Amino acid sequence: MPMTKKEDIQFGVLMCFCMFSVMFFYNLFLNGQLGHMTWLEGVLSYVLGFVIALLIEMYIVEPSAKKAASRFAPKGKKIYFILTLSICIVFGMVCLMSLCGYVVQSISTGFQAQSILSDYFTIFGHNVIMALPLQLLIMGPLVRYVFFKWMKSKQTAAI
Image (cartoon, rainbow, N blue to C red; front, side, top):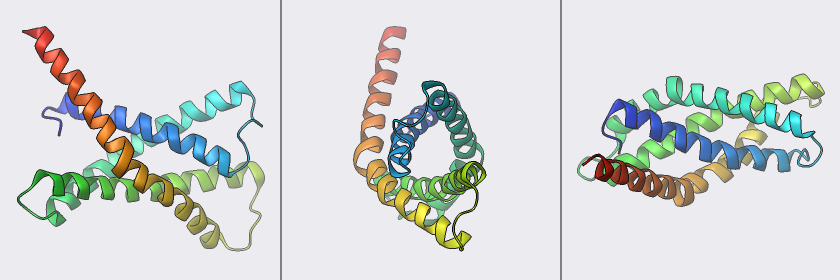
């Protein structure tokens, strides 16, 4: 786990960037938009989406997830806290980013279905099926490994 506030922000930005990148292209694929956007539309969508995801993660989801994880994670091993925190962050981000995606999709294409809740839960389900294993099995371990190797090399260079 990051030790300082600066490290916490750096780690959060790196994790958010990695998770958002995969989920962005996954959702483009799911919605049949991969290859149908102009390069400029894709870049603007990516940048705007990443900024929104980062702000949601830093100011809403992460603080709430840390409180929940410290309360509900079994005490004794750090891995329990990390896993609980990761699960809380995934569910929080999927809830809010699915809502953002649904709103953006509805604005651009209009409300096409009869049930807003049904549409939202479909988007939520598709996203959680991808995001949870991605975070727990791939991105979480990979980003932690890269981040701590980078931090270790920074500390060694400073000496």
